Length: 373
Length: 101
Image (cartoon, one colour):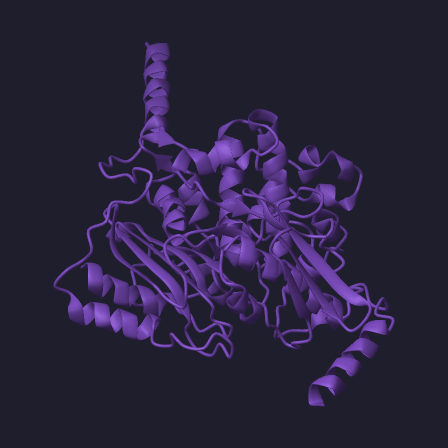
């Protein structure tokens, strides 16, 4: 009798793992479009915020939106482009790419190709025997490697910037070597520090692991082909290592498909792309963020997604007070965003060129909500 | 004239020994400027499919010392500054866009 009970529990558990959210509307190649009507005042308010500075490119003060797409209940309800961009133009992701890298790690987990507790050296054997082997895959997707990485951009100190050196300087030819030859500033798993290097490492591990099943260019059969991101570009270094922490290029409509995958708990057309529980883990403050006692970086993150939830353990309030607390986002330099609001069945993609970090997710989404509600 | 003075200062800074600290990388501002110009210019033109005029503005950074040459036929962008500082990025394929050489 007990064996029967256990069998039933296991069977129901297996069934639960296969269940995806019910959803009737999916993009058939491209998105269905049904633009919102009767919301002129709300649309005007949104555009007053996002598109007012549709002027000279150089100078770059304030908000410079190049594209804005709103998906509500699986349908494009608002879409606008500016400054020479249109729906056919790919746009740079900058650090939005980090959320892609963590998702690709998730697919490798689903396929049994890696475990989050694996040392990165399991998948990067050329680094066996080095201090890098203390880093796990989970450390890499949660900004917890402990590496002494310096994330400074055009307004920082060029000579000490780890990321500028990786993208444009001496680290660019072999970025994995550049990342993994950084010294440690803390034991892996004990320090939360935002790092494009961590994401590059995660992406490299994902590519190696997925390549064992999907071949030399694994990101397409594993993810992009599945969700219809037909024209996505993932730039690499001279070694063939994906940049990982930046420089994915796609159209806003394609970026929205990635958001829609997360909105649907990692499922696409009823099939599970990301493992059960992955989206929840991605959108829950990571252990290393919660326990990190450092002063810097108080924006909560999960598996390389940015979160609206408060973190009482660190006295961090809700980051976006005027929007639902379940809001989360992939975020990149110059105001790139893929924003998901599950409680509103909403995905928003915004691409732009704000050289002074003018983009504010809270201010954008509260205006979008006035349009769609 | 102001730009020339700035550029000469940066050139001299680039020639200085910057290996004294483990958190300082052996890049000069000019190296980073041309690397940025080549990589971002190539991706702007051949991945984002924007115009050359747009891309010249897109890649401008401070200091704005990189001179760009767009080779549309071969899908390459070279950025240079003074005599000895240059970088080239070339388009690889539809999946991987541009790479900095």
